[in-house]
Image (cartoon, rainbow over all chains, first blue to last red; front, side, top):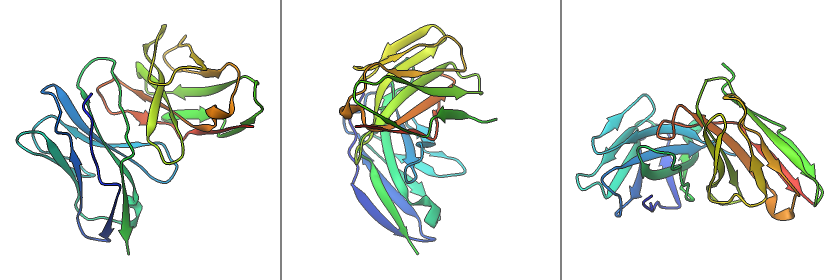
Length: 111
Length: 112
């Protein structure tokens, strides 16, 4: 699975959009981009995933560049409850290979 | 739907003791896995299972055993606890490896 690079920390004002970048320059054609988050010491929570098209769900939007070498997770209206560590993971879409978590980005939403 | 449940929430062991961390899911998921998370680090995969009777090793399997006799349960056994196994352990399940994984609340283990 390809390696990802994320900034270690970011701040965002409450109510503003939080844009979390991820670099995955060595991604392969059959690898998906997944985002999970971990609030305090709870178990990680799935957010969204995509292959090459932009994706949106009730939690967030995922923007993947055309060359697929980077992506951005967007939380449209950040709240204090969005303060968490966000993990960007790339993995092959099928088979029993697994999620490799790095150290992620610690997002702090500021009142 | 309870989702993924883990017991116990906290455990303290002495070096050399053995124990089993329990994990159960009620979503009829085929795929289950165990991760450990050390302070300031991401999660690392210990073992996983793609269905009842099938298990395989992950990134850090040494010192741990697993079995999968039913779809619902995936226990993790520590054979002889060591201080290096002090960590938070998370169990996860999903319909298949490529689908979203649901994580349990974790077991915080301290080995003295």
